[in-house]
Image 1: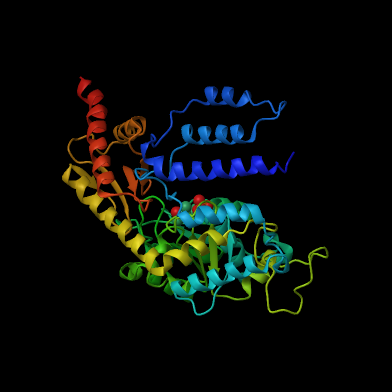
Image 2: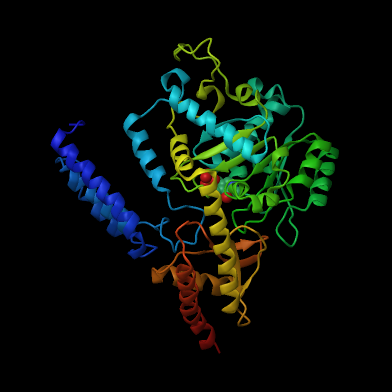
Length: 479
Ligand SMILES: *Cc1c(COP(=O)(O)O)cnc(C)c1O
């Protein structure tokens, strides 16, 4: 029953190919966001009782229809959202291939090709980021990469941590992130047994970049109060507004204070591939570790994160445990068992989707894609401003946070939320609201898709004009 017969397989693969191609070509004609109706969706799913066997192609079609109707279409060229990309063609093929071959990537000897592809990529991306030597792991995404960085920093700073845990430490460890940093550090602090109180949120300047003077002050105060600062995170492209912390200045502080420097470049890090944007990440090569998500700006399907480090021993120290049942065929070879360097054990061959995409696009192909998307971000900013919206963030990355400059309530949270809701309901585009610096609401539109064209930008600005009028109606009706 699990292995279907040859004729059914042939029909299934053919249908799968048609569906994928149909979606690549047809996604543009779908509403970007679905109507949300959990009761109806659940009722539909409950008709599948698992009592009778379904026809294979019919089951596939059921899933296709469900995904088509009940999904924010992140591969849609008018999805201006969180950084979920339109997957590159080669990356879709790669993920299907990985499912079929199902390589076991815990032990090197079980899948030398998979392990070496990932090693090759780790070194290639490390070199692009400016590392002389690179170790690293592929992981589910930025959150896992940041968690890995936190563990590596703890293991490297406190030799007793690995065996005896945080309770063996004399002083309470604390780490520093900007108030605009990703909230995965709060989870990571919990998961590492530090607790969220160990995460110090350093204030930001007017451009939403970490205030380095405030960072220094906070470290001094923590030391005076008997705590043990051990890690500072520079965010290279904040999730909300694309702000780039001053990495080189933070690296100076990290060196003077003997802290581990982690660069969270989950989406912004890809900017190093376009030479004209490289300067925005100046200093990233001084980071002890770097988070770079391939499933963001490198446009491969989820989940594909990377944690890179220039310290060749630290992942081994952080993760190596002895396991008598693991294969030993590779003993004596100059190779690393991936499970000994990562949080995961059995895991998917994540690297292939990036490897095949990069092999076909080349560095130059990625550079062009990043350059074009950055230019689209600038064009969107200019078009929004011409239409009376006011941009409230500064960044070379393609994300625009903006408010309505045409009337007094145009920067109010309630009004902006109404505009966003109206855009979603139109099915014409997807964007979101964001709160900057803890108190400044804005609309947020990010170029996440290499297929977003000038027409798509115009369509967003037109949709916003309609939605603005709808959202203003209740304002005008007020006494
Ligand atoms: C998206 C993001 C993360 C989290 O990454 P996931 O891949 O969603 O786990 C972490 N940091 C930054 C800056 C991000 O933008």
